[in-house]
Length: 173
Image: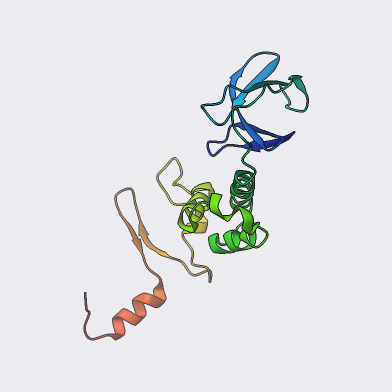
């Protein structure tokens, strides 16, 4: 029995190459059903999902072991995207290096996986007063990036960029 997470962050269970999703939760147990909606297989586990209270019933289809590495890959890249500052492509390519070629058909497109990674990133927002956080007001080199900021207008530029513009005799738009 192995615990997995669905795309929407809910509990999922892997047992004997069959995938189960949570159907219902009670005060004492979790009731899982087969991920294949045409199948009537069910199983019951305790709330911590480490023991079966009711063994899985029989399935009406063959197991799909090729889908398991794809789900595990998505769980891995989501966890890395949420916890590290690595680039999207670095997370994706390092995760794909260990991915089995036999299960490549169950893998989503690279664009989809990259979007999944970007969606896990923490978005920095303005504070309660409507001002940008300090780390967004500076460039990577530590130079001030906001020339002017009030409740209606923010002007983004650096003093270096302004001096370059002053030296030019014409502007092109």
